View 1 (cartoon, helix red, strand yellow):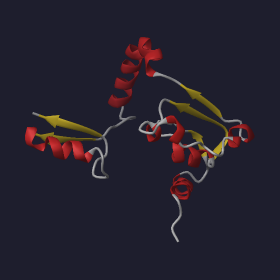
View 2 (cartoon, helix red, strand yellow; view 1 turned 90 degrees about the vertical axis):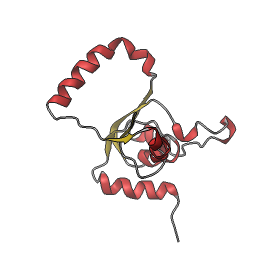
View 3 (tube, rainbow, N blue to C red; view 1 turned 180 degrees about the horizontal axis):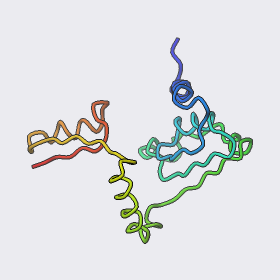
View 4 (cartoon, rainbow, N blue to C red; view 1 turned 30 degrees about the horizontal axis):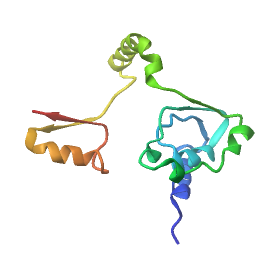
Length: 139
């Protein structure tokens, strides 16, 4: 018997976060947000900037999150935001991030595909489990 996606997410979350979740940056929504809400700590914070799992669905077919009561019981703060509201702070952000990168506090992964002939392979990697990080096509 296989479990549904919600249970797979939840069991995986316990493995990675045995002490619960204090902050979750959500841009997925749907089943993933529901799983996180089952594993948040008291006073957790969830900034929300998108819900990509729902974008291709018309509003009457979008999934609801069934466990919103956890927001109350665990006093979770959820706040949506749009990046455009913070563009005036981008210079400060870039300067601070450069420092973190130089100090080795933040690292990033990328994969470079060389030549226009590798375009399709690079694009395909973004939609499969073969890619981790940013995809760059160098021509």
